[in-house]
Length: 444
Image 1 (cartoon, rainbow, N blue to C red):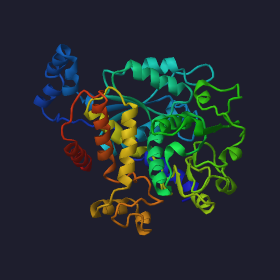
Image 2: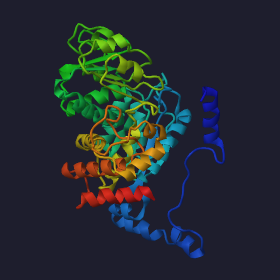
Image 3: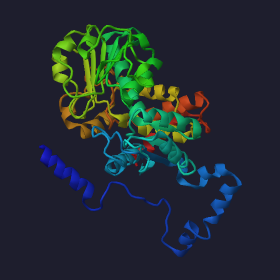
């Protein structure tokens, strides 16, 4: 498909029949005078009074328990950059579609204006003040496409101020999915995460948050070299913000090429074609390459594999091992909402990553294989889903987004971690039954 054909199809998709991708659909009938009286006045006064008497009743009589706000200011949208809240709205609508399709969560896209400083960048204080006021309406907040470094302050402050989950998907979604892929890829090559040297190219929200998250899984800070547009982030630099300074390395390397020598794992959140075959060849034996720049990765999979990479992943759906955030946020919020969690903490995020890793290593049943074949006919024809022994494959170290097991398993593990760490307000006694109920819910 040419770029002109794609543009035409995409614009028609978003315009035809009814502009946009989301709408409000009532969950109760309102076809008769009696139903109207129950939906609005005078009947609506009864739940209002019940909630006035006990605010916790809001969860029983409103949609709050299944409602997430997808909040952005449009300053860091996909690969498009600072395009503004209006231009970012189609992406937030798309995120709402994914919440509903994959996890039966109702999500409302909220693009914020007038939250910028004189340079057109995010004014963190204005975003915080605006989002904090939304708490009575929503069960969770999904922050999206807010530029660094303001995004760090926005999320951390809101997590402290709000009593519902606040989750910046650009930071943590990629971290969770990529960690799952790394854990399985390391099993294939027989390495331990605590012994691996990491090179991270890109020091924005994703690069920094991924690196922080890998530390919780056992990686060692001294084994990281991070690069930004100016080269290696080292101890001698005086132009670093606090987030970059966390990963300032004691190293003589000054360029990405120098940093790659002897490394075990490369992670790219940066620019197209910045990694060469010679760089891959300079890495340690059986290196792992996760080149996540979109739409053009830092190095294409076939080139990286030919240069000696053992496992390769990208951010693209047309290559194996796609690091796709839709593997994470629907199940994470499903589990968090179902136990009415006050937060999405590190234990819950780690549980989500491990859930994805364990799924990729499990046998594929005939029923699941049929669903995967329908969603990914080319991959099925290539034999990606063949075999039922549960053995890890280099082209399938993480599950596919349309694997029907993903959301139920992630939700179950996240809910379990929320209960174990004391942030859950509801208890699920039978986790296996809960996982099955989520599967049945999203099949409808």
